[in-house]
Image (cartoon, rainbow, N blue to C red; front, side):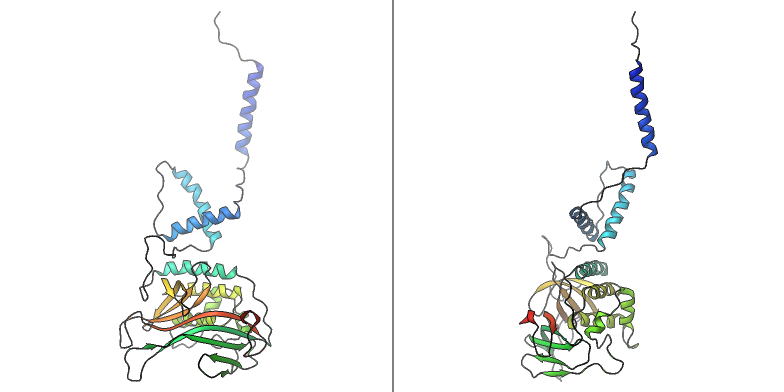
Length: 342
């Protein structure tokens, strides 16, 4: 007789076991997603940051199902949280020309992204050697300033020269200012209520709050007649250029600057030493102040100030002040070079 073969007990047992396995699998939680290696996290983060900074939405594949998109979103959100910063393509990639001097800066959103990246680099920088209270903080820079005659007319830029300053770490002793081509000048210690944002000592700077909101509130707490945002931007620039802040404080200063309205990015700027980089800028009262950073390491290079608007002093983009920080360290005496600067 032709009859369908009967399934033996062994086949029934296999099907039953497979059914049980599927049932148990449905009851178990999904397996944990293994952590990505650090290099893979970096690559994912960099790709995500570049896509986000470009301002263009990424194209979805037509075959991608909505459910997969929803599942992928938490992973992207985690990558953003881990990154803490969004990369900005400011390196002059192919097809993108560097902005000329005095060119209009890019948007504030790009400045926030860049400052966050600079803050991350500052926080991850090398540990600063301890500075004793009886030492002096030494800062060497190249500077140049424009001058204008009493009768007015276009400003003239003097050649850049070396500037050296020694500041008492705790403010207990006079400091020293030495500028190339001029006599030494004694720097008196802070008077009145002691050190402040406008008259800081190293001890004071090292004790600044590292919470950016608290730090910005402290910096803005000054002359009520001044523009608080411009005052904050100028004060942070002075702290970056004229003090030796610990890495955690430097990072907090950059994150505080993120919160200042009107801060923008200039894709290309040059400091007083001729070093080209990317700049964070703010314009107020007819002038634009720029902080220049190395576009690879994000190290602070220096500052420069340009005219914003044509006038008697010159056309828009005229440089009226520039500086370049060359060395920082701790010296035992005013007028003495630190070992690293000798």
